Length: 239
Image (tube, rainbow, N blue to C red; front, side):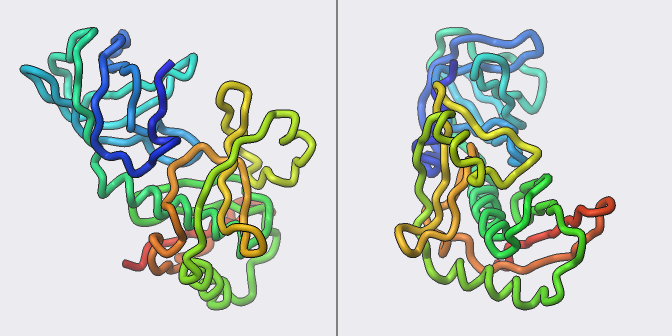
């Protein structure tokens, strides 16, 4: 098991670690990592590893069996040996873009309160697929509502509940295509706002900004019909 440091501090961009193994395909397994693995629509992190006598580029990060996180080198080259101490550094601009877009998609699910059937995150844009038989009449109003939530500078925090608690409150699950993230028998919840200002609470294993103001201005993109009832809504960071 790899300790996922990104869950407790998504702003940690540079940290040490120790190599505990390699995969047959040439991936690197560390005892702890700041690299987020591909999942939930969010791409795996990229960056660099450095150790005494070596350096390599990390192209992406994947999750393997048993909560093991695998760092995938960009090119076939010598790997840090097992037991080596390495310094991890994220491609921070890319990661922070993912954090902004991921949090913005949570807000999109607030202003379009319909079941989510899929989603995808990139550095400057993202999209959600909704169970939406009819297109919204006022796109301008939806975009204005999104930017109003951003401007309110709402805190983004996390809580953990048990699987039994989630089963008792199924309304927390908005995304029909992704299973709620689990950790040691617990479910991670991401909360936007507090008390009477709370606007969203849902299971999520991704990385997010600390407050909605850090998202920046948002722009809605095109809306596509995907099947009889599904519609895909694109969202862009405007700055």
